[in-house]
Image 1 (cartoon, rainbow, N blue to C red):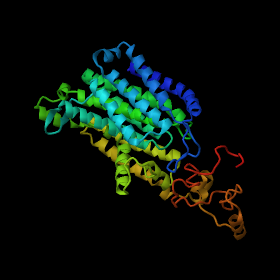
Image 2 (cartoon, helix red, strand yellow):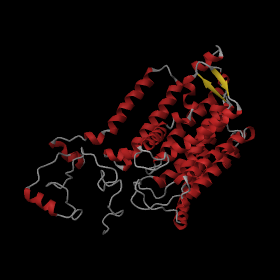
Image 3 (cartoon, rainbow, N blue to C red):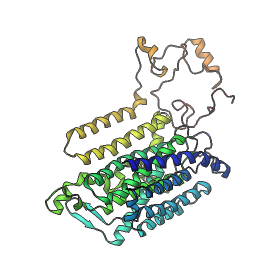
Image 4 (spheres, one colour):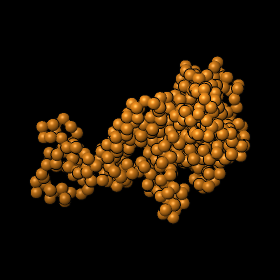
Length: 451
């Protein structure tokens, strides 16, 4: 565990320290696209954050190769080299896209080639544990097709969810943490060395995301771009493929019955491993909904729009930061809930806990629709938005109507100087007053500066 933590910290430190210089390079290189209709940021922001993340990946692999225990992963398996090859290819494609906006079909072809490069070097699915059937061995073509499909789906799921500051990096970090705990448990508890590469990949992926997040949290100073989102999606898929396709269910020796009975009984153990979609369920759901929505409208599945889940949260009335935290909450609930169920599937407390937290998540999701109002005696102790509206004098009302928009600091406020907006009314994403100017608005970035 100490060596994993050292690898994680090294990856995070290199990524964090390189992000600043990479931001300056992106500005000089002109990798600052104009604000599009679907964007929620107000000012052009440099991309190419994936450059720092890729060098963090290289640093993590280099440090792990020189550690006593983790060096055995490189000596006994070719999977780290396969990951580095595929990551380098997908990273180059992402850098070109961040700078020159290459065609979507070209990116899709590059993703398939990167997955194929990993398959050629041994990072592929060899068999699948299927409940009620047993351990099913796959042919070379079946394993290749399934591996490529899994990599492409995961990359695009992460890429689609990268729409708010810190959203994609945080959600992937949560998924990687849950995956790391499971893979480490399989390796240490059961002594299965085939889980070691996946554990290493998860630790490095956490370091990449943690090192980049301080620069990417709202308001973001730099975006990871496709060079970063596709890279972390590929690393996440590589870890899932490594432990799913290389680990033999019979090696666990949990049950002494037949092979079919053993696989059937150990289904909860394989829930986080069969597909990485179980630990990135939120971006995957967003991906599926986006494809259905665009196809229904007669558009290309790759056509960009403002219908993603994070855009919906802004339309409901959530602020930028609150929308990101809600997505974090649901990702952590699904990932760690699945992890807890795989450890002890017979515990009713786990199921009840997940149900309770799901109810809490629904309340948080609909909070702007049901903003509570504090009683009169408690108004001095709560924020202005929870205070009751007070009647406005006719003269003040006429003055407020005649005042220009944004002309005075008291515009839009009641006679007591507090906000008099009705928060039960939904505000469309992109409106200047979307719950405190977190979408696209005319508010200056610097408070008090003249417009």
